[in-house]
Length: 228
Image 1 (cartoon, rainbow, N blue to C red):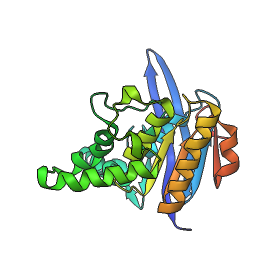
Image 2 (image 1 turned 60 degrees about the vertical axis):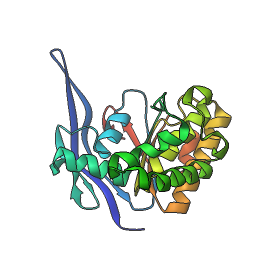
Image 3 (image 1 turned 60 degrees about the horizontal axis):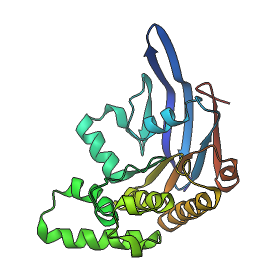
């Protein structure tokens, strides 16, 4: 619990917009402990999502390094980094990114199917596991529904189930309640913190919701790409 789990060292992300240089992340150092909950907060344009995406191996830094369990993730070949993301990191985004032609159950199965190269004889066990994960987020009655028949809160719960089916050590959430009303947002946070407690998972959440700050172990405040 007290071990360093995820860290960033002198992290920079610079974008070129025409002739203008934009420093989205500007010299950040941080350490996140195993099993902790962390909120990344700050005004729009502060670099919150950029930082989260770099921590998750989705967006390569301009300079600096990120260590996940002592592995420098951006020194890994692209294929290896993609495999690491699939197995060890779960992602929940503001927009649910569910595949519209697949049911809730099939959407949740996708990360396992992508990783396993499964054939017919093992798909039953994956379907069973996906159904169990959907039950854990309160959606056992919606497993055969397409995303078009789900509410926003239900769609986000499917996205959470998809993010945790591979039992990741790290769960990264980017504005997970940004499209939801306050009551639904509260239920999503209850689900996320319940999952964290049951699975001893490390969770990092980007949010504008100041209510979240009182629930996490620590808060990272950003302004203009720097730690406040």
